[in-house]
Image (cartoon, rainbow, N blue to C red; front, top):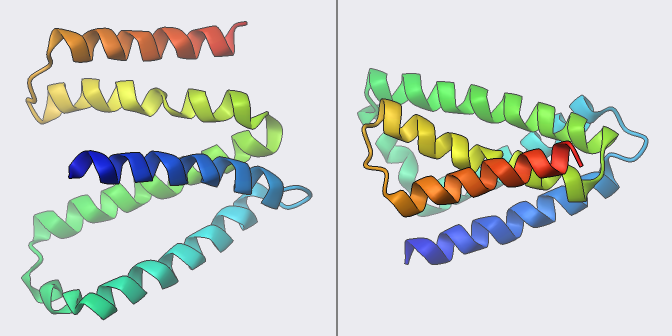
Length: 138
């Protein structure tokens, strides 16, 4: 079932790029990112409240808080740079380069999370990296 959520994530991420490119026309990319974040906050908290998941807040550990905050910072910076790139470049070039994050996540997960790397994952990551460089330097 996880793969279905991953496919839905990819589909909506593709829509993000297209909608963002249209939405940022003539708008400061940082302002556009802030508006996007505000919408996400409303949706995410609406879902959490509807599910009754707010009761878990007191159970969060210091480690949970630290890494969720760091993840939020990384997300915010990623979106700021992504929207800036979209404001300057074409979606067909920016979006694939942004997906270099897949290969980077694989490498980082092996180093810091000690996840096992299969040869297929390694080759896939190399193809992603190679494809990214083809897009950048074509």
